[in-house]
Image (cartoon, rainbow, N blue to C red; front, top):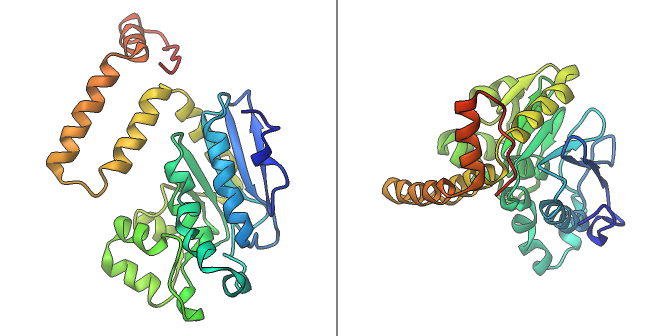
Length: 264
C-alpha cells in the first residue's frame, strides 16, 4: 500500500499523513472548528484504517483533530437522512481502530463528544490534553449512543459510571477521565503532540509481531473466562517463542545491546 491507495483519495472531512521516517501515520479530523463527522466520512475512516494497517512503512497510527477540538460529534441531520442499512454499519465503521492490528493512539483535546468519543474509545491509547471534555450527549436528542460508545465505556468504567455519563449526557473533564481509566495519560495542551510522539517512539521500539499479538489477545479475551484467557495467552506465548524477534530480543538482552526487531 502506498499513499496513492484509492482508499486514501477524496477524503471527506479528514486527511491522512504518513511519515515513513517515524513509521507513523496520522488520521487527522479536518473540518474545524468542531470537526463534525458526516455519515460518508465514517465509511472512509474505516477504509483509511484498513489501508494503513496494510502499509509496511507504518508501525503506529495516530488519530487526532485539527484545531482546538477533537470532534463535537456527528452531523445530526445525517441520521435522519440515512438508510437503515447505513445506520446499521455505524458501530462496525467506528470499531476500525480496534480491528487494526497496529497500535492506535487517540490524541484528544477540547470537545470529544458523540462519535468523537466513541472512535477514541475504539483506540488502544487515549492521550488527553487538560482541555479535553468527553461526553455521549445522545439523550439530549432522544437517542442513545449508536457506535459502540456505551458498550465500550461500560467495560472501562463499569455500569454505574456509564449510566451517569450516558443517561445524564454528562461531560467528563480530562482529569476525571484519567482518574476513571478512560484516558491513558493527561498532559498540558501545549504538550499533546510531544506526548503523542513520545508514545509513538516507545511503541515503535517493541517487536511488531509481539505488539500485534498482544493487541489481538487482549481484544479477543476481553469478554472471556479467566481460564479461557489464560489458555489463549499460553498459545500466543508459545507461537512467539518460535519467532525470530523473540530470539533477537533474548540475544540482545544478554549482549546488552538494543534489539533489531524485524517483525517475524
